[in-house]
Image (cartoon, rainbow, N blue to C red; front, side, top):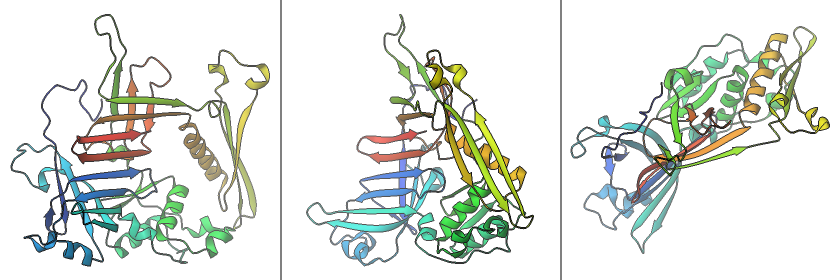
Length: 365
């Protein structure tokens, strides 16, 4: 099963997009949005063919250049009626806060550049650490503080346990977003903002229960050219990470006055057909230290880091006709190459654009 239809049928596409500033629909020439990996801000670039003295005052140069706060909602999709449609017929891809405005009088265009609403949390600094609250309580509190809707998985351990002996974390000024990312990594959670909602938890199986399928068919006697639902496809194999990998996590638990250590190992040498005996014995070793973990938590952290390292051994990049199905929590499943690249990838970056070329997207996993 997959969230997209394979094989894709040769039916006509009528993608549509609406951009709104507040309740005002704006005319646009092109836009590009990029959703980066979990914990990172998404970005946006918009080009608007504005006028010096537009009939609608909200589209004039004067209106745009006087604004100190601009929030843009970007909708896209495939409405049943491509002539009469509204944002309710489309998918909200991003709510962005504009950081920069560029006016080009020669062409009459305005370019807007910004980030998704994680920028609200990134641009502020705080030295509050909330040691007597849980990660989920902090996530809910920060979401509401910045006008976001919290979608948060409940946690039970107070974050003061994370801070034990973590003097840098306890004393440094960080942004609320850095704090949330720090807590999410300790919990093994995802942390991201979509629209005006802050997600903090394990949402991959809920938001995208099935992978996005990339089907590849090599040339054959009947079809002397490759076929795929991707318009461009590229793979990368990191041979350094293809070696055996060992991750050791150590921790001192102040409350228990005890030191713990756990190791997670991925053995891959049996997959190699031609290796020097000495090379076959080589292993990539990674050592990490985290404060305040129990033995079980050390093992969980080692397993988590090992999985994160191993997933970068194989990488892929693909371009497609645009749709609204892929986000950073979506998995990409490749089939048909007949190689080790036929596997599942986590999306690290997804870029969408809508311009004279049409509606397209590029995914990196």
